[in-house]
Image 1 (cartoon, rainbow, N blue to C red):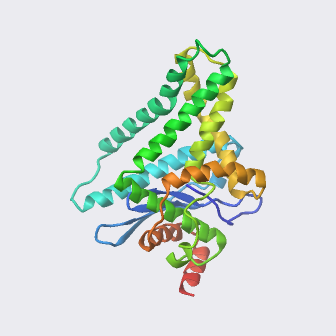
Image 2: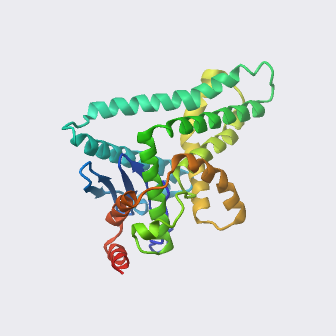
Image 3: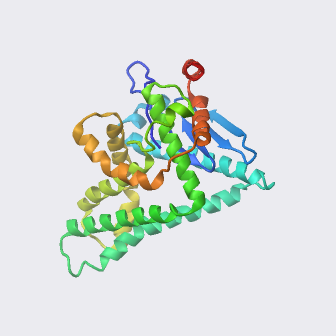
Length: 308
């Protein structure tokens, strides 16, 4: 989910392009639109595009540091779920099937409950049994964070062995390569994008790692209360944790500071689990998604560079 570009209005930060991999496709987000490009079973590329709220159009308080991170996360989840539904229906169309809203809601509910149970409830319950041996709340919170991180890495490593997930990870790599190509100012073509790495410092995988690390710091301020109180605190603090992690990942994406670059290395390592080298067809899909969200002037520039 990297995001970056040189688009900039007066007095505003450059807009940060980015997106995510979906089933046999890629979703990209621009300043005014989102687009998802999916390769159909018959090898054609289908593109869906719709208007998206620009960050610069939101109320000023929603653009404040730390607050904007929670807003961006909600926005990404909303657009990402829509893109996943579109891509899933494209795959199901070959079998004359289509997901209903009820099926989507049920799937998302189960996934959310699973995520909360595995990555929030389970770590704090497991470390609870060590309280009799460890008095320091800082040590307990640190151990909980370590368990959460190990569960995250283990989960990603496990699903990465599934063939269908490997395909999604290839499109993830295609998304990163195309964003790299665009940011570098080269032509948007599979041949040019192929030369870039499939890792990106602003990836959502790195964001998850920063969330795990930031949570250890913030949770430590609340000591080690009863297990139900801990679970409640962790759920209530999620927007703050996400906001803080968002600021870190934005800094990592636009800073050349050696210390910041060094801090980004663990996230890049973790991306080795969530990305694969894409083929030219997958790069072509990612390029179609990005071109669909570029403003008309930049889209013309990209097409001219591609022809050249």
